[in-house]
Length: 130
Image (tube, rainbow, N blue to C red; front, side, top):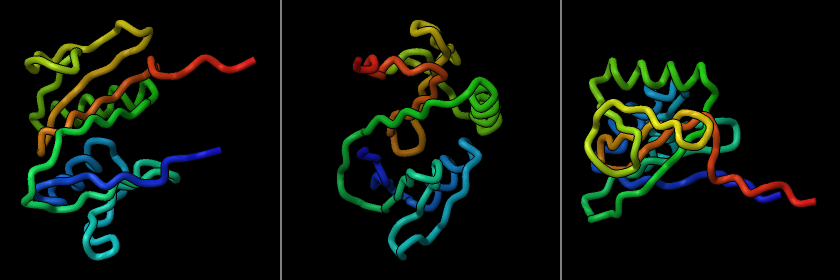
């Protein structure tokens, strides 16, 4: 089995970006992992390593599959942080919640315009092979 271990996420301020994501997801983080990264420990097998840069970087999309209780808790933390969200991957924040794929999902862009998503039912899973 191949598992994704970590992803490097470019940011203008690695500490602020990591702190915010960790607080929204309610997961641990480390301000100075390996000296140049601020690591967000998404789960026991995946770390997002934020790195500060002044260079141009593309907007990336990161999606987290969560349970219903986690979805509600993250949505509450987004609201508390004053971060708007939307049901569609593009468009204006309208605090809508998507339901098109048999679950719930929302998108938000903060703070470096990366596109973050939480969903309760994956629409990206391939059917199991027989």
